[in-house]
Length: 222
Image 1 (cartoon, rainbow, N blue to C red):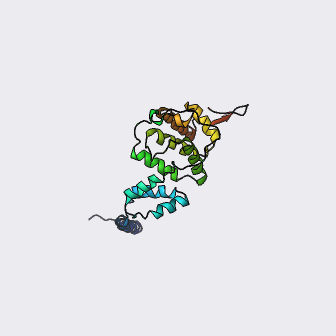
Image 2 (cartoon, rainbow, N blue to C red):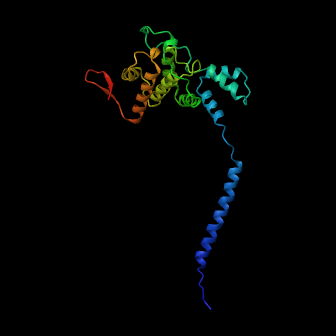
Image 3 (tube, rainbow, N blue to C red):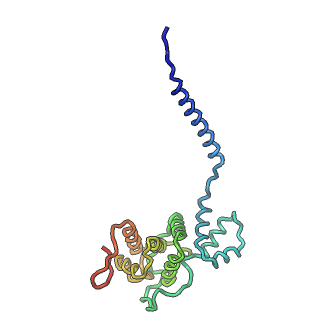
């Protein structure tokens, strides 16, 4: 008749491990049952609302839109577009003569995801960065995504947001980027140049290029 030995210490430890595993499985089931799926659209709209100024938030509240009417909320936020506020020009110098807006290549419509990404990224910026972007976009005058959700406008908006988020919200630095992209003025910038500007912003953020000050005090990218 065979004789078996039993390690009571290891058996006790194994029993504890099994008990802990059953407890975790039981708790996990409770977590899953209690978990509520986040309404991503609602969160995106909430982020856009937080990006508004105090005065704009009061205007929004005065509309009295029901909290569950997401379509009406989105339409109201579009009407208070942070890229469509009237603020002074960047510089007192006159803008160059530009072709009529319908002759500028805006590209196709930006996707809903692109527009959401822009609004979400913009909402994460600080007030100073918001002011810089607002000052530029309003001086240009034809960058409102709400008025025309084109590829050109979203790409330019994303480029400005990326520069601001990295701490490069400076007119001189932006001018260097515009020169690199072959842009004389954002008003006349077609979608192909907007793509180039967005790519330059990505290269700066990734560290592939950097701002360099020459001996004469001018800046360039290299």
